[in-house]
Image 1: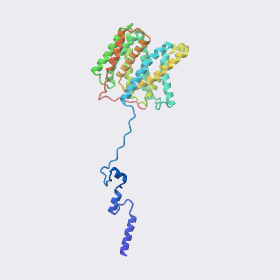
Image 2: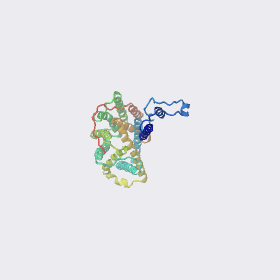
Image 3: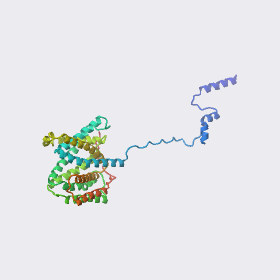
Image 4: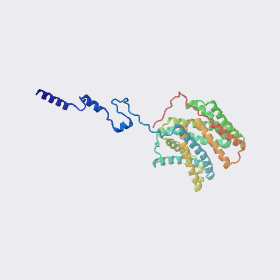
Length: 370
């Protein structure tokens, strides 16, 4: 009876044992812990082990990075900007020959770009686009004002100096902007090779301008005023791309073109009669320039965010050289062989420029959030 009672108590205790309790029999415990030997393991020569040598989980294979690298993105932005800029310069000249209303053409490009970007966003073609916000309007308002001031002083300068002479002033701007990059945008000063490239670029422009048809300089005050405003424009626009937080590059395109179109609307009052008499062919040419202007504005803001202000100015000068070469080959045949050689020399000088790196210690600029 005592034996039966003891066995009954033992069985009762085993029934009360929770599932998480260890198994009493050692051989049964080892058998449950040991992995099974399957024929597939035997064929592969993989024998199960009771105690694995490694307890770490296998690393997951990383998915391939499909995003565009920084170098590829920079090349893509710079190439698109240069192509659109050189093409738009030729398109604007052809548009002015069809419709003698330059202020209206420029306003149509700016306002048409803003309308095209907003319409593409509403149709779902652009996934992200910044909404109109007061803080961002205040940040981009100087962009519009400086843009209009640059256009005004540019036109006044061309009244006293021809295009070739004006090009010399433009090609000297990288020398000033490189110093502004150092003082205001945290860049280092250019290397000796880059300084030589900038000077050679200017020498090529001087050689082309002085040997061309008519080298005339009058009204130095307007040229000097344009020079100052243009340098401020290049530096401030780079500052905006670095400090104003935007959801996408299309937001910069929308803000800059929409705000700049407002004052230009009041600058085309003297061209109303010409606009009324415009032919359908002329309006179609203007529409083509609007498409080119939209593309150039996108690539220009993207390139500004990726390169320094000095390098962006040099790229603009190279576009001028390319457009002058196209202009000489298609319309104006006045350029001499020496003048063409100077243009090619300027292109070669721009190739050897190397962008100055950012300094290690630079003051943090305040940012404008959403």
